[in-house]
Image (cartoon, rainbow, N blue to C red; front, side, top):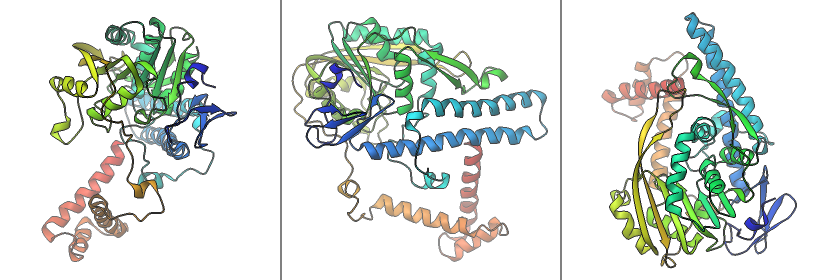
Length: 451
């Protein structure tokens, strides 16, 4: 059950107006009676808890299936005529994928699917609504950096954030805490009585909670560019330097539907977050402002690689301060720093990252109310008709064309014959049909081979 100090700050993420009360292995809203389970002891505080749980469980099924498929591919190659060194590498990979499937199954046991899981084809067809940039394997390598080999990176990151944060921050919230090392270091070396590590990813949150409490976790690192044959799969034991002191808590939730009462925190930290989420910076400022008490400090740490197509939303360093001021922040400090990033001893792939650390103090309430990202009404109310919007119409037409081509594949027809039928059905002109059909098949086959 969450610590009493955390319970005092919690607010229903659905109705956003009432406290939460423990009831057995769940938290219940005192106003709307919504219930939020505990996942491995971690509050599961999504506005639609059952739907979010179903989506992550579907992703878990796909995640575990992929380890089995990867092991199968290694075994198949092992049965061919390959070099002795290649045989050694393939054997190591196959065994490691099977071990990783077992290790992840144990770590993610609280998320285990109890119903009949979706078939693999259905998972591909019906993508879940968790943000596309987030999946169980998102930032998996960061977990090894946090808790196995990244002491230098971790220490330098903590020093930068702690300097911008200052002292006297009793209640600290880390939004997008990932595997939790920064939250842990800030709490261990700072003076906060309560530090909350919030993330959307159950794998990272479950791992963080286990390590915070003094446990360890054996996992396998699969480096992007292994230094040697033996480095293609490296078994590591992840553990914290020591069990965290009391007051370090983990919450699973959406950062922009953060389940906390207004002005709950003296500091909010957003590590590598503001430029990767599907929310513009001005809206992020309004959300952070709501969470902070007056005089509270916001520290952001990371790059500024905003993903937006709209150029106006891809802010530069010089544009941040006026946006912060408009959102009620003052006393802005900014610092650029070059840091080593993801320097695994088993990988040739690493880089020096130019990061920006900014701190800003809440001076007043933001004039803009923070509005959680919300789906259109026809998505929120599943009884309403689905409008044929341009993106859906385009996807339907593209899927129809692909379905026609794929349905024609019977093991007998050639690309030339497939292209002729596509042209006869007026899907594409004759000169373009052959290259289009070939391109579609190449993308599907090569994509499957490359994973």
